[in-house]
Length: 202
Image (cartoon, rainbow, N blue to C red):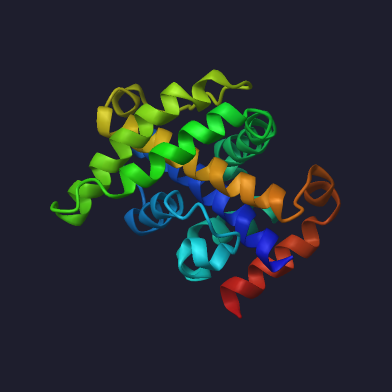
């Protein structure tokens, strides 16, 4: 349950970062870096290894706990998270897309090594956004992002939104691999909430 909760927090963290970016034009850089880096660790099935530490999923855990307590401020966040879990089902039946993404991400991981950290991440986000548009955008249901037009028209913001959606999908794949299911979300919400709170405050 701990691993599944962390994977679900990965989905929620990416979704919440998308909400922040689309409405505010800015987002938690620390959490976004963790989500971005998770895309480059394709061989591991261990969530802590993929994210470095459960502390790097703090935003996701906090948002998950808030929504399970009924906080309605995160309606868009949960809509994106549920959308990602739905897209993952289609992605699981698309081996050609899996192969294409699996081939390109290790290459992108090496790009911009001579740049400052934020410049390297922006470059990688741009390339991942192009990969997302060429692959995941073809799957349904498409995730429609709400927000302010002034931010949704900014290239850097849209690059990061697509990158974060792919990171959320990566966590959704992990959630499914670890046994996560719709049943779990419907009937084990209290158990998930307790596990998330233990990770936050334990």
